[in-house]
Image 1 (cartoon, rainbow, N blue to C red):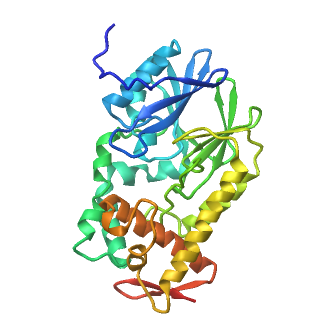
Image 2: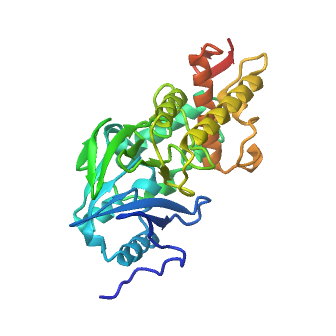
Image 3: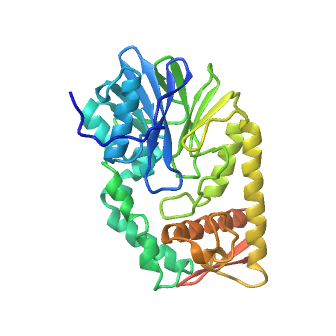
Length: 340
């Protein structure tokens, strides 16, 4: 049977990690990350995959090709595990279930937010606009920042999970027993999967080898997402892990060292933001405009990156407030932060 799917890039291939465990590169076009690293675990009657890519023909074609390299087809997918709800991890899940009948698995917090994010998102858009205004974004800039993520809706086929998992639950995937570890911060319900016997950690976006995930305060986050993230990092650091399998970049082995690097990154960012507050109360937007962002100066940032920058600044300000180093003034119109 011939396929009507477009050809995939030549570098897309299923790479064996250990026996029956493979990394699959699923393209996310026109994105600086280029690919999401998904993982496939073979079993006697099919396979489990962890994270899936966008709902695009290019992503589906990449899956068809790499499954074929392993003697499998799309119909052989039995279980789709989602580390978190961002489109590059979740977008294709619904389409794959339509094709294969696979069971979709995600954490309880992500399942709870699915409807607001992808089905009844108009209310969330209103909340985002109000949130941006209260945190200092000029009214003329709000519409562009508010709608910056709307194109992502085109890359998602919404699908409710067949199984919702909690902290400590175990997923059977071929030879692996995957322990669910809640690791909030990047999203409220992000989870990692730990195969203790093989000493493998499927880290999603929680721990990446050279970049740090965006940790934002937003209408769907907890009150202190950076505090949650750093606490979860500390828990992950204690695991016995030989190989970390992240959703972007490449696999790596120095988990404890990488955790310390990320902790140091946030320590420096907290110091920078505390310094930028100076001696007067400021909105998060005012502070965000002055932060030395790795992606470039404020003037060059896209609307999506500007929104992410404001929300990431807020996460750091709220963490500083939880530590007693910063206080906030809540007027009827705006939230102002100042040194405590």
